[in-house]
Length: 112
Image 1 (cartoon, one colour):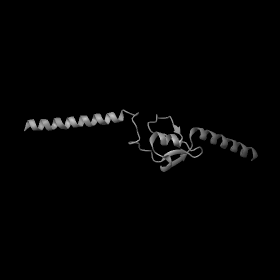
Image 2 (cartoon, one colour):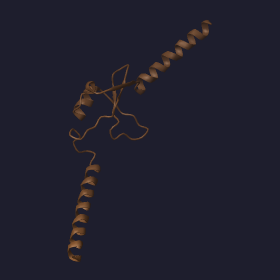
Image 3 (cartoon, one colour):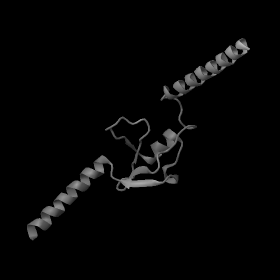
Image 4 (cartoon, one colour):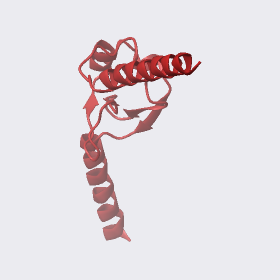
């Protein structure tokens, strides 16, 4: 009876270690093809001015990575047009819009 219990415990422990190794291997290989396991963030941030989409997969905190919809589709095998999009501004367009708004307020401020 004790021998049977020991073998059952050993088998469970072995299975548990094997499952952990599989999980760790999957998590530690960011360069593996992501086409099968890719889950797009919902909604996908897209620039309302130029159409670039933000790649949040494997992103470094504080660093934004923007790409064309074609590059996104080729990288992940997912067409951004089929995903829900959240419209925002990419950093380049945001800077341009800020300047336009500044000029507008200078203009209306001077005429008041």
